[in-house]
Image 1 (cartoon, rainbow, N blue to C red):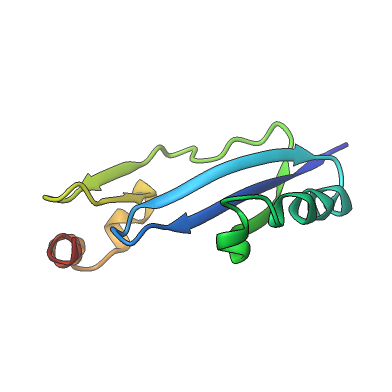
Image 2 (cartoon, rainbow, N blue to C red; image 1 turned 180 degrees about the horizontal axis):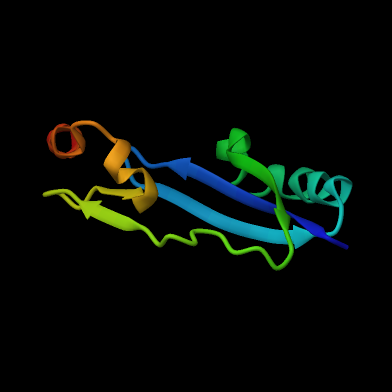
Length: 103
């Protein structure tokens, strides 16, 4: 087996905070989809049925190899960025200030 299929459930609160839960890792895409079917109608999950995501991940491969940075706004809103892209985000400071104003 060279890959696994990661099932996550994510949704956004009215406050803008993202909530992410890892459901599990499965050996096949079919098994991952079966897990989604099993969880989809459970309390909490059924209110956010579109929140399920299946991602294929290579075993032994690192994610976030460059690290990350998180900007926390005045009201606790957080934005996470991969630092490799920071030099390419034109006006990142203005963008973050705008996001702060949305919190």
